[in-house]
Length: 405
Image (cartoon, rainbow, N blue to C red; front, side, top):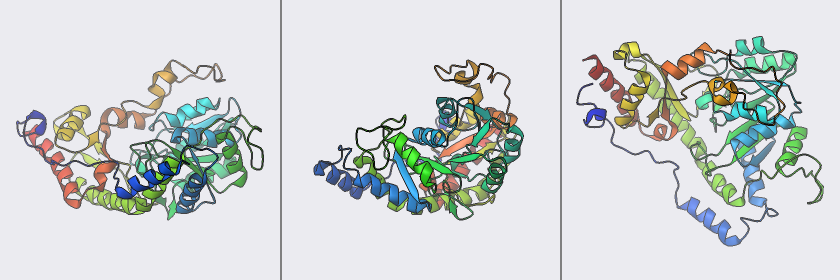
C-alpha cells in the first residue's frame, strides 16, 4: 500500500472524534437530583423506574414495559415466561451477539440456527419454515444493526405453527417496520441499554409487550418471584432480582427525549452513505426498502469484495479504514455455532439433550459474512454530518486506489 495511506504514516482522511454517549448538563442534573433525594438505591421507591417503563412502552406503542438489568436478561425473562420446557427448540440466527443463543440454553432449551439473508444479514424466513419441528416453540428474530426483519413473513409462519415470537431489538431502539416500532410486533420485544447502544445507561434492559399475562409473569421473574398484589416476602415463581435502579431510570428517561431525533439522523446519514458506497466497485451496502420505515443504524454494515481491492483481506482492509479515521470494525470473526460453547458443548448444568450436536452445522451466508464480507461502521459515527459520510466513502476510495496502484 502507498505511503499516503494513514496506516503507513500518511494523513488521515477524517481527523475527528465521534463521542459516545452524548450527554449534556440535563443528564448530570437528573442524576444529581435523584442521588440527593436519597431514593436512588431504595428498591421500594420505584416511581422513576415505573415512569421510564411507561414512557418507553408509549414510545414503542405497546401497553407494557418492563425494565431489567440488561438485554440478555430481557431475552431470557421473555423466553421463560412464554412457557418453554426443557428440550424445546428455539430458532435463532447465527449472526448476532451470543446472548441471543446462550439465553436459550439457560432456559434449558435448544438453539436451532437458521442462516441469514445475504443482502440484509437478518434471519431468512424461508429457512425458519424448514427448521420447524414438533419441538419448536419460539423464534427469536434479531433486527440486526437496526435493520427490521421481514416481520410479516415471520409472524405468518409463527401463527401457522403456533410459535411465540420474541423480537431481539437490542440494536433497534426507535427503528420501525411499516411504521410500527421494532419490539412491538411480536409477543415481546427486548432492548439493551449497554454502553454502546443507541440508548444507554451503561447497562440495563427493557421488554415491551401487549400481553398482560406475559407481562405479569416476566414481572414476577424479574422481581424474585413476587406477584402483583402479593407481599414483599411472598415468592410464587422461580425468579431473581433483575431490577434496575432509579438512577439508571432517570438517565434513560432524559435520553429518551433525544432518541427519535438521533434515530432519524442516523437513518438519513445511512441512506446518504448508501448512495455514495453504491458507486464504489467492490462495496455493497446492505439492502433497504424491505419494510423498514426507520433504520436505527446501530451498526452501518457494507459488504466488501476483496477482488476489487487487489485481494486485500477483509481484516487488513478494516484496519486500513480505521486508520483513516473511520470508526469501523471487521465484525464477528465467526458464526455463533463455531464458538467453543457450542462446539465443545460446554452446557454446564443445563438440561440439553445429549444428542444435540453443533459440529456439523453450516450456514454459508453467515460464514461468508464473518470471514470475507461484513465490515461495520459504529453507530456513534452515524450521528455525524453529510460531510463525514462523504469522507467515509472517500477513505474507502483512497484505500482502493492505493492497493490497485
